[in-house]
Image (cartoon, rainbow, N blue to C red; front, side, top):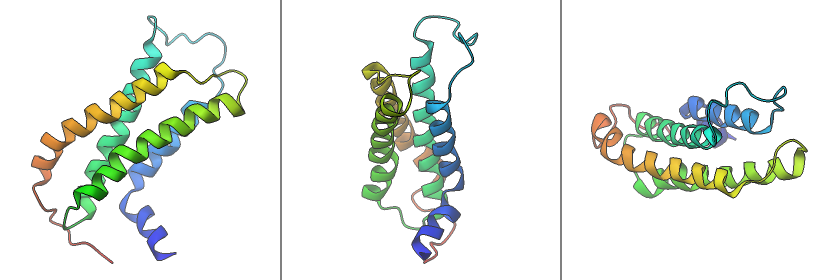
Length: 138
């Protein structure tokens, strides 16, 4: 139970981002969306949502861990968002009648995660340094 509470304490923005993506993936838009300014604009939205999720996970990981374990960081910022993305596409197909499972949405999501991880490896890692200033709490 304590480990579960630590996730809420160390990753609040990431959890909020997961919830926002969950909501945006399953809500029913009111008619034709006026936000669609050009074809395939939703692919850019998918890319940005999952790139943001991975970036937030990187930042919160660095901010809450004293010693960086890259296998854990990659598991949480690369594998977890990709699995979540696949799961959301599956839920759209099974739980809604107004959305469908689009492989190009999934591809956009995965590209967003990969590009964000490459960006974070070079930028966020240098901003936070090799070690965070905050000591890890157990």
